[in-house]
Image 1: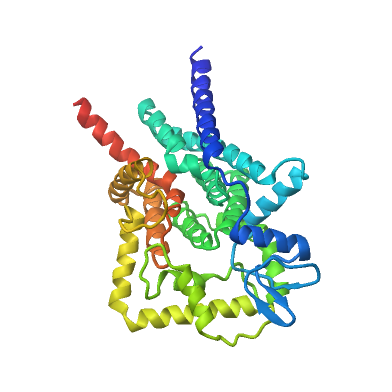
Image 2: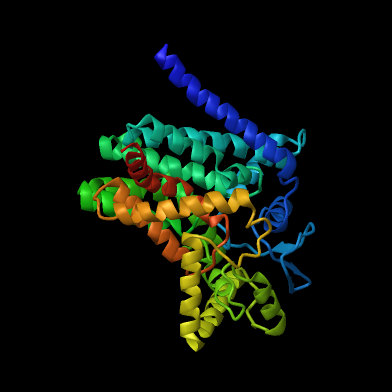
Length: 413
């Protein structure tokens, strides 16, 4: 009977989580593809090329929907995994249902699975039932986490994958079975395909656990091989198009978007658009156009930073603060809505305190502290969007557990 009650608890939680997400999606869900996703999907279906920009009569056109027979320039601007998630969903819909609604439905299901995996991770490290269920409830019903599943965004898929990554990492630490290592490595490859910079976090994870803690060089080699096999089809695609091994190429764009005279924490894409109209970059129009354009963006951003280093250092520190806590100058719609700003402020503070406390304790939670701070310091080099903090939500809650336990002991005493 007790076991049945435990099962029912998680089922009740999942049912309520489903209702919350369906309710939000009914009122706030995206109903169509827009911007880059719409262009990428259209151009891929028309030409079989994953790209934004179109060449018409030997002239380059800004990101645009191609017509039959027009040349689409291949892009490496965005990691491909979420695009193929969209594309496969459209194929599955077979024009019988609105495929955007189907994307949202799949994301809601992924979000529910994320709740289950997060609950499993908590149970491994925490014995206190109140802390276990409180932490799971916070994750399941965190307003931004509920809302984002209804939006055309890679964040829901990314959270799902990062939780699987953490879960199988924990299983490897407990018992290094080949099956767990294979799944961990495959998921690592998928995470690199959804966020190009994840390769850095992946390498740090391998170094920390398999060299610093377990000292298993063989595990590193096996993991690297499997993850490389996972990303190799896309690497091969890029080598065919650009004659170089590259996964994504958006460093320059992101650096310029977040480091320009407008000094916005959120970055300023309009500045780049205005700059392109004012200046002729004289970049040759060929398959390498996007790579060379990104290099051009990088040089412009570095010129701005070198011209006023103290101002850009101040902007960097402001971005760090905004990522850690709040962006008091945000222009995003509803950013200061109580249901967003209040829970974000609480989890930001407790997560930060937890990271400071746990950074000295060797093991999984020390690693989480490193992972947390590395995310903050790395992304602040570029720009900070509100949804970026959601990527760290599971980590913040895990780090906050130490703070919750301390406060609970104080209250009970």
